[in-house]
Amino acid sequence: MNGDPGGGITVTVSSEGRQVASAVTHQDGLFSFDLPPGDYTVSGCMTFQVRVSADATTKHDLNCPIP
Image (cartoon, rainbow, N blue to C red; front, side):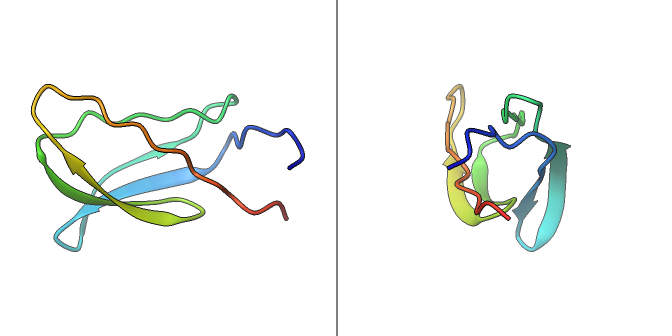
């Protein structure tokens, strides 16, 4: 780990094979999306599945390899 929080990484969100959102991580490595309830695939330097529930906050970390 080099201590870099991962700013500038493009993160995309897909549902049923279609991209529904994208964002670039901030300098501090943070990103967020406001999504309706459903199942999503989140991709950046890694890919994972997330289920969004009504009136809930879901948090995940991206663990990116250092080039």
